[in-house]
Length: 372
Image (tube, rainbow, N blue to C red):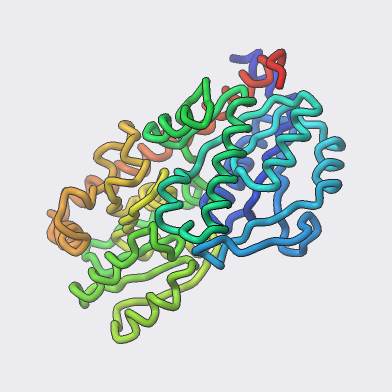
């Protein structure tokens, strides 16, 4: 391994994204990953859309969610960046125009590719992509991912349940990889959880696949608890209208990572009752801070056996309201025991995730005889 680490110190890795950094789960994933990989590699850079349009020609709103956009890159800018940076490996996590151009340049320059599958496009299509343009975007995403997967050294997935989809899209070599945590979640001292349950936090996009209506129902049923929503999304106005008579509901909008840690530390329960959730990073973030986490059966995090018993599964109860009431009436000793042990487990999970990412990058470089 010492020899491998010496190899790693010479490697340059480029991540080509189709999303703005830290504005959704995928953008945050690679912002966090880069922060860790920079410790082991010579250089790690992210190339993607910018708000000032310096790398974009234009963009269009995504069907079903006008808070997110599909960006089209300035091809010459991306091409010149890759040629100047001269990366040893290119990571392609998003099957959009940026990823497609990055793929084409990598193929022309014989740069090994690592692909990552973050979304189940068929499931997303059933919720969002009803219009003709939406179906076209969904089909485009699957087509581009298929191109990536058939020409990649390895395809990474974030939960075991996505293997069937990766194979369907042409993957021959697949590995499940963990999701990294931003350093701020593991570096800041833990604030002990309060004995009395007073506040419930949801952190994430305000969109239909997140099952947010269940949280509003719980807020109506348990008026003594405060329910806080941190995040933006297409459902925000609708949710605000539904809860305008609920004095125990607050919408914060999008907040920084630093403020998110503060908000997590203030709450006792975090909820993620998603209908579709390939992993569930916000649940991992809450676990790292020693909070009680409620997630749905659909969360990809449930496929990680190393995280069993670190959360409460909403699928074992009739409703989210019942699950929250169960937590409220938990014995204080049992609640404290759970909260005290979870951060240590999550810290280990995070360390193993970064270690494995580094190993995979080294393996990909060592197998550079693999030609696209």
